[in-house]
Length: 182
Figure (spheres, rainbow, N blue to C red):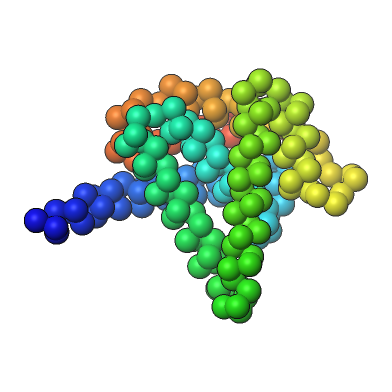
C-alpha cells in the first residue's frame, strides 16, 4: 500500500522532466543571445533560464493545487540542475551550498522585481530591471527593451494555456522572433 505513493511521484517525474526540458529549450533559443542582447555566458544562460522559470511559475501560481505542485517540482529541478552545473564547473563541494543560496536569492529577488513590472505590463520598468540584473556593472549596457517586450507577450500567451496542458507538462513558451525586436 505504501508503494502506491511512489507511483504518483514517478508519473509526475515524467511530466516534470518533459516540462523542464521544454522550458530549458525555450531559454536556449539562439535569438535571445544573438538579437535580444542576452550574453551567451554561464550567467547569461542562468538569467534567461530564470526568466523562463519565472514566467512559468507566475502562470502556474494561478493554477489549481496540482499545477502549483508541478511548478514547485520544476523549480526544484531547476535548482538541482544549477547545483549539478556548479559542480561540473569545478566548484568545490564546500562552496556549492553558499553559491546555491546566493543563486536562489537572486532568482527569488528577480521573481519579485519582474512580477511588479509584469503585473503593470510596464515594459520600461521591466527592461530596466532586466538590464540591471543581466548587466549589473555596465553603464553602457543594452536597453533590453526587446527582451522585456517578449516577456510581456509570453506572459499574455501563457495566460491562455489550459490547466490540462499544465497538468500534462505541455506548456510551450512562444518563440521570441515574431514577438520582439531589438
